[in-house]
Length: 349
Ligand code: DOR
Ligand code: ZN
Image (tube, rainbow, N blue to C red; front, side, top):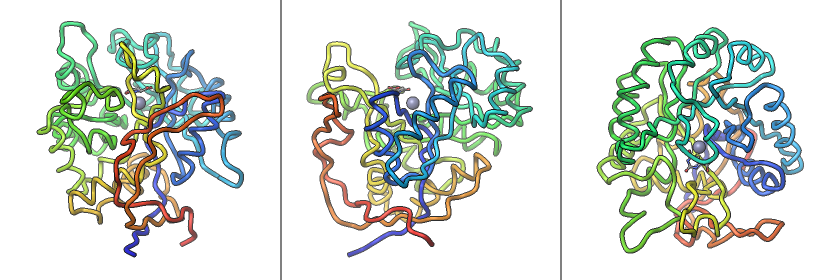
């Protein structure tokens, strides 16, 4: 059987949630990822170093026995965040801060109104070497949801990267040709994560033949020309684009709802979903750079020293997973076939 061995990957954008949910989400990610950037949009959000340290400990306590999976912590920026918060965060080992425009997505009501007010905080992050991770969508009511990423680039992102040329900025879960072009043309201080759903799907997969709530996430899936632009950029192996699943669990009944939650739970099949993309693109040789090298290099962290092995062996993503408390969740790509399957993880080189 055909196999593929790559450096152990990392997930540079992930939602673990908290408390009982960690018993589900942490093993799912620790299955094949060595590290993950943990998003801070809890209720209440993770807004300071003490909260980040406590959350990190709860995640570590949920690791499967023997796992040395490392969560990389982030702070949720608000209009109350101060430069001192950034100094303290750096001291406590926090890796990055997440900028959500207020109301952009799940649990982001406490987030930032008036991004320019945060420039002193960005200044402190640049000085301390904390990365700025951005949910790049405007939230003004009159802006069409399919245009929100492009407008964010023009109104905010281009200004931020110009004002802080030595601040490392990750444009998270990009969805458009505009975003891909912006990152390509930007300096080496600007990178981007791309989710499996934005590489595998487009808005037809959300809306044709009935609304498909399990394909609903934010930023929302875009038209196929945008999907193609994302596929093209990863197929070239560009070094500033890297793996970030945005795996975001929600209960089945909250997604299959008159007002369904945004988020795709992809953790249990994450590396296989990306392998599917690169297989479709005839670029499986580019999977390792995207999944295991580019993110670490961008963050200035060492690459992992172990490997994982995938085998080409078609399997099906399960239709449902059930949590210990009986909550059902529908994983992303449920019931669909994938060509590659994780065979073994964390092999010594
Ligand atoms: O679809 C999404 N779900 N997008 C986000 O930005 C947040 C995430 C969540 O936390 O559920
Ligand atoms: Zn996210």
